[in-house]
Image: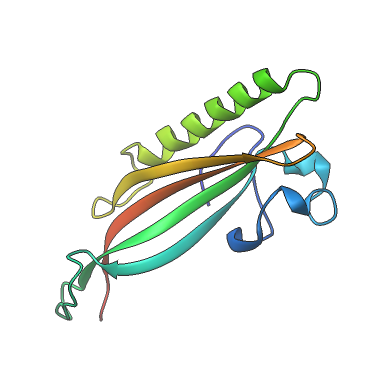
Length: 140
């Protein structure tokens, strides 16, 4: 779970199914704002070539990870709401990229990029922030 403060809440819906289309039927409107889901994608050898590693050290791999969140757009001031969503996205990126006691020293995180969408009525925006995580995959 991310250590996001304030109004952030973790979604009960897994990341591959997460998005604005779930509001209000699956995710209530009252909790959808700043609701997020974390998805773990492909894990592959860091070098790009198959390597067995050894049982003691494990295998150095990279895993794609995405954090997706919803942000309510104010109907009368969507531009300000969109700017606020970008600020929330930036705060999320800063927290994940920060080196601190919450991350083990052998994990390296890199920002891959961010994508944003707004639903057709303009009520909800969705931000998807992708990271790559380099870590040792334990073999023993």
